[in-house]
Length: 210
Ligand SMILES: [Zn+2]
Image (cartoon, rainbow, N blue to C red):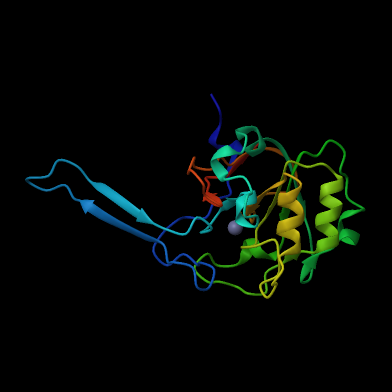
């Protein structure tokens, strides 16, 4: 039997009031049927932007002809992952990464101050990944890059160099993870996206286990 103690849920809770990127639709969850004397079941409907909470980005997010999330191999989202804790100021730079141990890393998660931010407040000065760090990660031939920020690019970015660099090189992006209770080290990551045809991303339930 797998002990619950070894499983870390690193997902945000999808609920009314969860922070969304400014301008994106708010998360809505409504009950379309409710148990009462005449109704046998509760049935809900959800209306949300696919980039809400803990989610993955597909290449189609930034490329007109890029792959949709439903075509990405499930194996990208399951397997060994290393968590690094970074005391980065505004952004993760290549200089912050080159001294870390990258041996056998296929997936990486960056724990920054973002994991301490409230899920209900959109914080514009989150830690982003610089272009030179994105290039460094491409050279590592990773399959997935994750961070506890709402985006791998800066809030005021207009050309999104880190998204483009990672996605163009078939590295999937996992954003909005919660790592406040996770120590740096090696885990197994599972964060499968929903199979939504033609979607540029998907919410995920992300977990780490030892
Ligand atoms: Zn996204």
